[in-house]
Image (cartoon, rainbow, N blue to C red):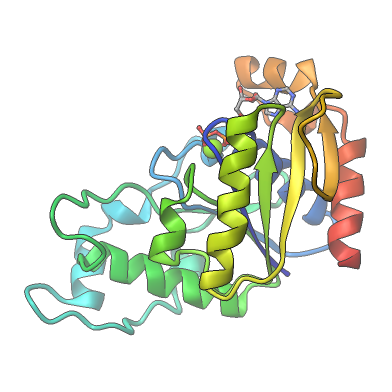
Length: 235
Ligand SMILES: Nc1ncnc2c1ncn2[C@@H]1O[C@H](COP(=O)(O)OP(=O)(O)OP(=O)(O)O)[C@@H](O)[C@H]1O
Ligand SMILES: [Mg+2]
């Protein structure tokens, strides 16, 4: 199963990715990819030592080329094995990193490289979780194209709901038909006028974990995330 986790900034994408990765890692080989240039997933998974792919300048140049002609299908079948790091809970993590997109749009070598790595991971992974960057821009780039489903995370505010609805719309354009809303930091308010796959309550221990610099799944209430996992397996 290949799942992309999307939503407005701060709704809990990275938290949900990390806790799902932990739960799925009990019975699957899990690869989590941080697609957000802010790169928070490593911290949340307790990984201190990692190298974002964007820093592999020589590798990218060697595989994609430089100048006006790029290889659109560079060799990337060894990248996950070489550059993913495994945390103490058996979760494999790959961090894409930051591209300076200044003026080059989507056609810089790094973008071509990332796209190829993602396509390969989507094809080959047993259980893949993509922690997307905030908002809707990545849908224009088609970063998550090919995943089985996308979670659009919302929190109890209208802006995050608006963003999630746009995500659902735009995901269709890149062929992702299954987009499920998940409410995070749930408190009962009257703005969720749509079907949601799961409600994850507001949990102070998730904030405490963040402050202590430990993965949220070490101390948070796992039950709502376990329910989400079960529902995902049944979809
Ligand atoms: N269920 C929850 N209850 C309480 N706090 C939460 C919950 N989920 C996430 N948080 C807190 O909300 C903040 C944002 O969470 P997180 O970093 O996972 O969001 P994000 O969507 O990945 O943000 P960004 O858009 O910056 O990547 C963090 O401080 C996190 O500890
Ligand atoms: Mg995040």
